[in-house]
Length: 294
Image 1 (spheres, rainbow, N blue to C red):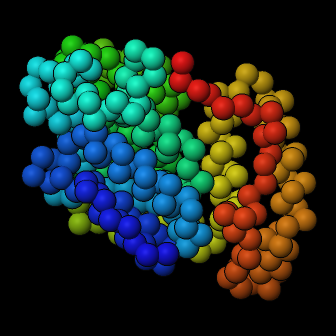
Image 2: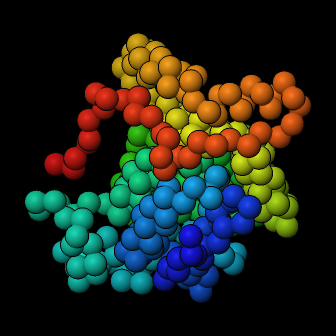
């Protein structure tokens, strides 16, 4: 598959690992409507490409993402202002859908695991966009902030669903009520990030983790696992997980991947999984309905 190009992102694939780099370094990778569209499109690309086993997201320059681009000044968040015209395609009735939420919902649906390599400042949508990513590694230079209340708005990007599930309600409320910017160490201590790394070691650490997944785990199994854990985070009873688990095990147990997984283990060799996400992913949620915006 040829490598696509994007206006606000850099994109590359090497040995099964896709790297998405937010690429507006002159604006600290501030989020725009164009970046929203690029992010949605790039996850369509990674899902469709069987060569991609894992996705890493990072930022160019000294920031991960400094939040919404405030170039429009006080009208930045006004959906009646001219810049809202770029968001017209996401309008439902008289409501403009939040661009950050459109991105995070697309990431939630991803069939490939997503690792965030947070290289610098990540505030506003720069941190809420990370919440549906699966594992977050951070540079010791990184800082975070759910600054919405200090800008006179509210948390977005579906973060009111994601954030308490990651760090607990008390921490989520404190960070959002105060809107303060906090250190990478606090993010680690409270469970937002998995590990801290010297700036020069961050991407190598993210790639090493991605390599462990890509080299050892069946892509179809990883795709199923990702959706099982994320979807069940909102289930109202463990029976929903049991139904999905049972369908998945029945399907995967007779698949070529299961035979290869067991055989390679017994033969003490690296597995070569034949099944592909694009063609062999079973539907284990026949009753799962879409969730339209209304």
